[in-house]
Amino acid sequence: MRIAILEDDPARALRLEQMLALGGHDTARFREGRALMQALRSEPCALLLLAWEIPGIPARDVLLWIRRALGGALPVMVLGGRGGEAHIAECIALGADAVVPAPVRGAELAARVQALLRRVPAPRRDRLELGPYRFALDERRAFVGGRQVRLSPKEFELAVLLFRHAGQLLLRRAVELAVWRCAMPRGSRTLDSHLSRLRAKLALQPRNGVRLSSVYATGCRLDLVMPAVAPADALAAASVVASDAAPIAASEPADTPAGAGRPERGSRSRGDASGAAR
Image (tube, rainbow, N blue to C red; front, side, top):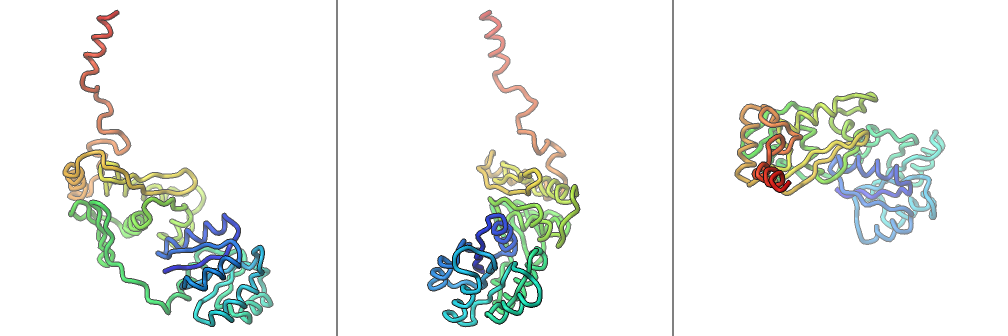
């Protein structure tokens, strides 16, 4: 579901885009009102998040134009502003459907977005597949190489979140709000421990075509990579994990390359040859 964002501040825009993406929404960001108005003439969207303090055309004039040109079909949520009863009343009188004064809180914003979008039925997605990985969303079951892997409820939600946004950096706070519905205290290792368990249980390694990385103090990302072994070997490794939910590190450390700790074939003969030369 496509949502337009009119916000010129890069940091605030990134937080909004991240939150909406985690909710399954596509976003289109605009930095000033003129570009937004031109786009809305030909590209429909389901909702507009309108920052009150923007350069160029004032937000109140953008809102007035939307109601005159597009009528009431497009829900508009105003973000920020002075706050207080007078500001909220002014925005609603101009045609806003919702007003979220500063500071904008993530959980409240997500709830208000969902409330405005309830009139539009979301497309049903009962399955998520990527390489040897498959998630039955309705049944909340995970499969690797065709075999089921037992995950806790939060592990399942986190895994689906990662696979839905493969290749994207997910901000730590946004992940916490999406999975745990709250921001964790500073220094909490809850997310890190869940990522570690997922890496082991689902064999999230290059040999299965993916790599799970943590970005210090920022977030995490699941990247698609070329498998390091043949597909048959990758599925066999996944089957071992799926059969008893044991970490892949039980036989080989997850962060250690397959050949680490063993001399390369032919290394001794090269050493002997160099010694003989001396």
